[in-house]
Amino acid sequence: MNNQRYTRQTILKGFGIEGQKKLAEAKVLVVGAGGLGVPVLTYLNAMGVGAIGIVDNDIVSLTNLHRQVLYSESDIGQSKVKAALKKLKAQNPNTEIVIFNTFLTTKNALEIIADYDIVVDASDNFPTRYLVNDSCVILKKPFVYGALHGYEGQVSVFNYKDGPTYRCLFPNMPNENEVPNCNEHGVLGIIPGIIGNLQALETIKVLTGIGDLLSGKLLIFDGLQQSYQKIKFKLQPENIKIEKLQDFYEWNDPCEIVPTIEAQEIQKLLVDKPQIIDVRTIEEFKNYHLPDSVHIPLNELKANTGKINFSLPVYLLCQSGKRSETALKQLREQHPQSSLFSILGGLNQYLALCS
Amino acid sequence: MNVLFFGIAKDIVGSSQITFSDEFKRPNSVADLKAQLIISYPELSKLTSLAVAVNSEYAEDDVSLTVDDEIAIIPPVSGG
Image (tube, rainbow over all chains, first blue to last red; front, side):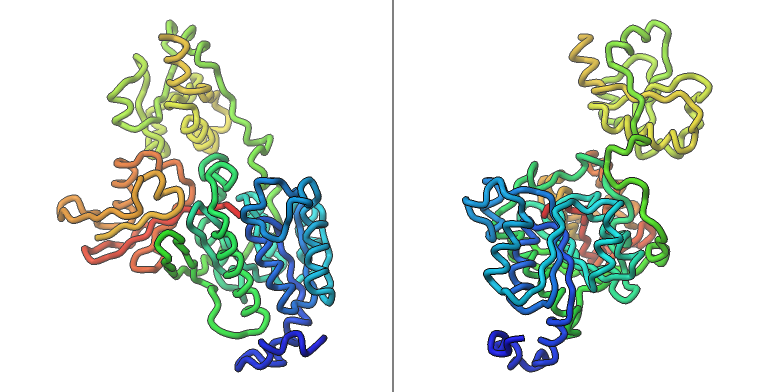
């Protein structure tokens, strides 16, 4: 270790040579080399973390450059981990960097993470976030979480010494399309820079033992207000009892496929008075509904299954076909043998075709 | 009673904050608050995991609410 290089932080009270030694001995895995991963990698590498692993299978694109400031125009089309490796090596050749040119999956997560002391979740999607959480719980590794939405971001330290986990805040993974990602929703370039740097700071604190960690605390940053809110939360003990990964984290689990029926088929069936369950809100139902349809709003469905005759086919209807899918999944849990269908495209599609 | 919205909840509600000033409509518990918000903003019902904090502390559905409480509605965010 070149002592001169880190002198500005080793002279710092509370950090010192001891802190620097701890960093030099540390192994950090960064999942994602995008908006959050770039600042995390740049600072951990600059500050003297001994070994860094980088997991990503993406390539650099033009639309990355406004926020992923490690990459240049000449890197477009190149693998992110390879481009990052080159830049980070030039920045600090002392770091031992290992690149994993793959996405994190149920097949490789435990094996990759096992080699590291701590994980930084710098991914950009829910399936990876829940996979990181469950893998870290199984392997008893702390992980530093960061995530963005528009002008906002969240940071926390999960699973630190049997502390709360991601699932203690958000127990279940959101459904696809429920919460938009940066590609759909947009992100101001500087926001991942701020959130990623906060993650890097928490990582350094975990490794060296300085300061108070964001363990059991969710930090919410609002860039428009320049405000930070800290929300305290507790461990739900069942969340650290995970012993194996789920078979699937991806949304398109084949077991999750929902049987659907086209809206025009429903029109043909209407003469036979099929059992149509409308799961929209009371206002939507009052505004318009199909004749003879039974109204049970989605949020009251579980308590009102007595209104449904499961010996007949059940056709679930909503405005666009999304809520009826959710309704179908809920009913299928309680009545796996019944004949359930979600009406594709919902009333929107029905009215477009049939009016 | 102030309710702050974050992430997608802010987009659905169309505002970062609402205030319950009317005593009769003011929700008594977190569950009550969620139910009222879903009636006013049905899109909120599609969020699978919606964390609620009361006075900067994570709150389960059975936590009761009073007029001075500051509440935050925190959906998960995924971007990176």
